[in-house]
Amino acid sequence: MEQKDFKINELADNGFLNVEIDPSLDLFEEIDKLKKEKNAVVLAHYYQEPDIQDIADYIGDSLGLAQHAAKTEADIIVFAGVHFMAETAKILNPGKKVLLPDLKAGCSLSDSCPPALFKAFKDKHPDHLVISYINCSAGIKALSDIICTSSNAQLIVESLPKEQKIIFAPDKNLGGYINKKTGRDMLLWNGACMVHELFSLEKIIKMKERHPKAKLIAHPECEDPLLRIADFIGSTTQLLKYTETDNAQSYIVATETGILHKMQQNAPHKTFIAAPPDNACACNDCPHMKLNTLEKIYLCMKYELPEIIMDEELRVAARKPIDRMMELSKQLGLAG
Ligand code: 13P
Ligand code: SF4
Image (cartoon, rainbow, N blue to C red):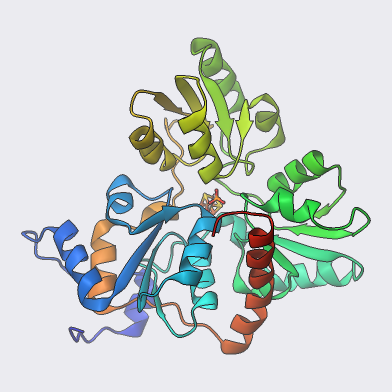
């Protein structure tokens, strides 16, 4: 590895390596070389910018990414996603180096559930089982019995006895949606994703009127009024599969705009319109996901920084509910 005298504080302040890159370099080629030299793999979420998706070895939703991280044989995992995703990869791979191009790529949903407050809430309901959405910190995972993602949440809840009391954290929108689908009455933590709550119902209704043949498809992190008028609701992978197999020709897509790249690649003859948010902007990007750039990925692979480092006791405690999710997903036939 090329040596460089980075000051740790400098990295902590920036969140990424702020090093000048030779402008004549072809970053696509350089990243490819580094992958081979270092036996590194780049895992990217669908919300990443198109160039990052195109250099990734695997692109997926949160479940697919966790399953892929669990079975990779690479020595280095470069996570083009947000902190909780890279942390999950580290929890599953204590012996591997897990790199996150920008440590400040956080998640508003994860931030909406601080472990100390959640523990106090959980302690008030000792007879409840805790199911947490993977979009949470290792501290919350360690306080949970089972982790779920938007791909498997409904099946995991349905796999438990009807009378089982459940706390669902941190997303009240996904939890509310699963309550409705399963007829359960799970206690919901009051957390939400800033990106999926920003959609404007009014503008979407007007858009539907302008595009009467377009189907509205939405991620379950969106609020209930939007979900009520959606033609299809699913995780990013489920939305993608739906647009490939369904017979409509156009879709209004109510999730982060990064997914449109893959949708368009997989169904080039169809039209995809980003659902409008409640602000002056025409699209709805996740500011955390979009902190990653090709330049930051190149630098983090070259210098093997910033790296995810975890306390071992916390890692072991956070792993148990993830393992439970992995086992249940296998039993429920969700590809891994
Ligand atoms: P999925 O990847 O489970 O669809 O979740 C979307 C999301 O918000 C990830 O941060
Ligand atoms: Fe978190 Fe929402 Fe961004 Fe996903 S889209 S990383 S849930 S803030």
